[in-house]
Length: 86
Picture 1 (spheres, rainbow, N blue to C red):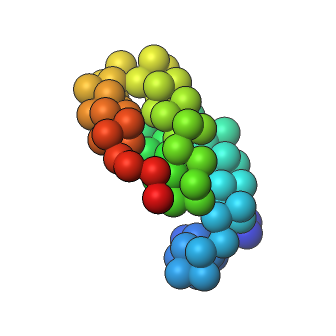
Picture 2 (cartoon, rainbow, N blue to C red):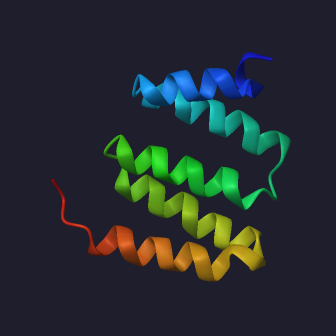
């Protein structure tokens, strides 16, 4: 119940608790693996936490597993690769 509560998700995001957010998204993806929004949100959290390459991996896999997400995932990957590392 904790990982499916949207209030927990919001509080964790506001507190920048990226490790917790990653676990929440990983769990939610196991429940709904065809949900592209969960996959892109997970990638966003990874990128925000400094794990850009892992975010790219997540988006690549999402594009492979959800064909309707491929173009959007590829676009996000391009944006991540173009970003300068802080």
